[in-house]
Amino acid sequence: MSELPIVLLHVGTDDGALDACLGALDRATPAGTRVWLIDDAQSGPRGQSVIEHWLERTPLLAEYTRRNQPVGESRHIHEALKICGESDVVVLPSDAIPFDGWLQALKDCFDRDAAVATATPWSNIGETASWPRVDDLNPLPENPERLARAVAAMPALHPELPSACAHTVLIRGKAYARAGGVDEASFATWPAALSDLSLRLSGLGWRNALCETAFVARIHEPVVDSDDQDALIARWPAWHARVVQFLMDDPLKDTRRMVLQKLLNVDAQGPQSDLFV
Image 1 (cartoon, rainbow, N blue to C red):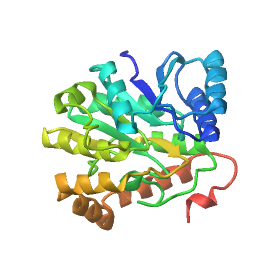
Image 2 (tube, rainbow, N blue to C red):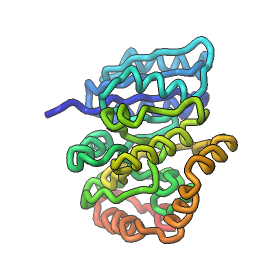
Image 3 (cartoon, rainbow, N blue to C red):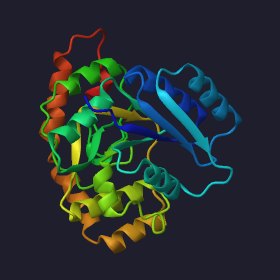
Image 4 (cartoon, rainbow, N blue to C red):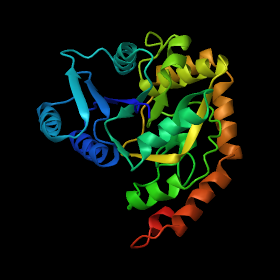
């Protein structure tokens, strides 16, 4: 069996979210998985203490690097991806909460379809990949284990998304290299840079797919700089309209309903009424 992708976790300023993310990563990710924490001078003393204690006990093969001065989110991620070369890499924010089986499911998505360049899992805050309601700030699921089992039972069809989503994304290294990497000169924030990257990948014939068999929750909504939004619209004038049309048509409506049905069929303790609103 081939190795799992590298997990590239970019550290933010929320120490509590970071602690929750690292704990979830340990629980939901196979021991020995390669994890690289990159810190663009964002963590404070408490955050660094959280990381140090985690590094001492994690079963993952983890490394941590921290800049003395920040260079900006998209540039920092770009430079880290460049170092990873043609390896497949999951870019994970430090307020993400991965669920059981998440990384293997993303890898399986790539293995099933060689044309997929980016694989995006479901999330409570996932824009076009949001569950249970599309493009909504859904609450954190109360029972991650139950939901993980439900999505794992989904048919793996991997439908197309308008672009990859920044809550979590697996990037195929070979496709990334062909596309020329992140345009950190034009986009400061990672969500905008990722949208641009995935649109360039699409233009080269690759696919940006939903991995409907994985779920990664997120605590905070992604932030996109207004200048980045303007730059995206200028470079890709049809993209915004395409996303709006996607949200209006909701082509994943039946897929999301199927997740709910799978969830209802999973044996678990306690109701999940908050997910059915």
